[in-house]
Image (tube, rainbow, N blue to C red):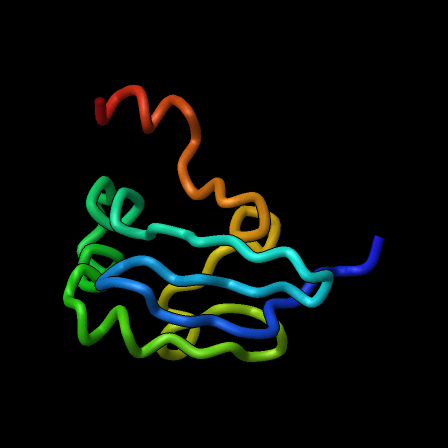
Length: 91
């Protein structure tokens, strides 16, 4: 299976991006739950809206800084950033 690349990213709100993939799939991904539940200060730093907004697409991947924050393409494609256990714990 060939990798699927992101072709476009559009910011919809402070932490939500609409991602378009090369196969035509479009996902609206809300990153706030992931960022809020993280205990790592380097990840939580992206709760700053200006820092979050500094994303870019590089080689078909969504990245921030020098890969300071990035996600597996499959997770973005399926809009699944958190394991179910993390969601249950947060509820």
